[in-house]
Amino acid sequence: MLQLAPASATVDAPLSRRDTGAFDELERAARRFATEEGRNATPNARVTVFRFDRPSLVTKSTSYGMALSVIVAGRQRVKVVGHDHTGDAGAGKLSAITRSADIEVTFTETPFVSVNVCFCPSLVAESFVALAEAGEEPSDGDSLPLFVSDAGPRLVGALSRMLAALSDPVEQRVLVPLAERELLFHLLRSPAAATLRASVGEPADRQRILDAMKFIRDNASKRLSVRELARAVAMSPSHFAHRFSDVTRVSPMRYLRDVRLETARTLLANGERVNAAARAVGFESASHFTREFKRRYGQSPTTFKVR
Image (tube, rainbow, N blue to C red; front, side, top):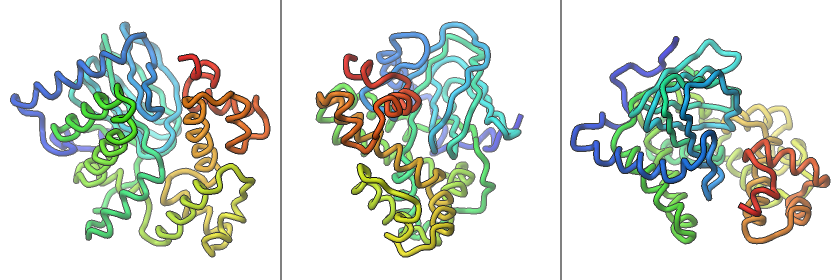
């Protein structure tokens, strides 16, 4: 087993006895969403809560970009498929996936509860740029797919605030994005997370890639190709595709798909019909849209609408 962060490393500072109240608050907030065994959705598609009542065999899933899992009860073992990297994490620990990857998870101690956050690739890139502009470039670190560390009080506090804000529609719209940025800030800034920061990408071309992300979001319903995106930011198609993946850890076309699905999810939440939402975001086939939506969010568009 490879533990990428030293046993004593934390994302901010160790949880002291005084901080146990904050961790208890996080656990209570997580259990409010953990109403069923398995994956529990929240009003925010990027935040999920997992609950398992019995030790399980290997569970396979896909992480879409950088993802954080904070364990509030039980223990899990995570393996990145295709890499010889395994992380073992229990209550008070976090495990972080640094890029899109297929993973295998075994819940070794139960009852198990965790809070999982999948970060939007554009937000990761924007946070990286913001840190670099503030004079904080990534320290040396291997670009590895997984690390395990202690969860510190600032990260636990931000995660608790995020879960609390999900219960109010206005707070969800205003405060959840702030908490998400705070979580990512702690992850990208921590010395223990050098591997995360190394995986975000090199500074070269980052502004052009950010411009391309904005172009995609502004034109997501249109037919777009890598060639068209590269032309929009004055780069060659091959160089653009390579640098886009370096900075965001996803391909341009996967990012386009994720933007479309996020927009469609908002339309469905506001009452739009499934077929209309699919057409509005650029899916020509309703069945294709349904397959991609279910793969991304774990439920069909129809099920999401009636939830």
